[in-house]
Length: 86
Image: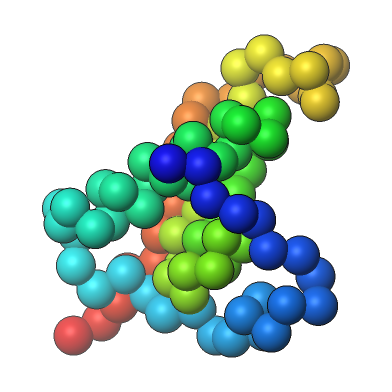
C-alpha cells in the first residue's frame, strides 16, 4: 500500500524512533511492503519508516533503473533495522 510521505516541519519527524523488538511478524512485513510500494511509487532510492509516520528504526534503499537517478549505479534492495535489546 502506498503511504503518504510526511514533510519537514511535521512533529512526527522529531520523535525518537524505536528499535525493532520483534521480527517475522505480519506487522513488520506489512510495513516493509508499504515502504517498498511507497518508494517505488515516488521513484525513490530510499525511505525510512519515520517518513511515513512510523516511529521505528527501519529503512530501505536500493536502485535498479530509476528516472530520478538516471546515472546511479545499481544498488541491491536492502532493508536496514536497528535491533532492540531485551
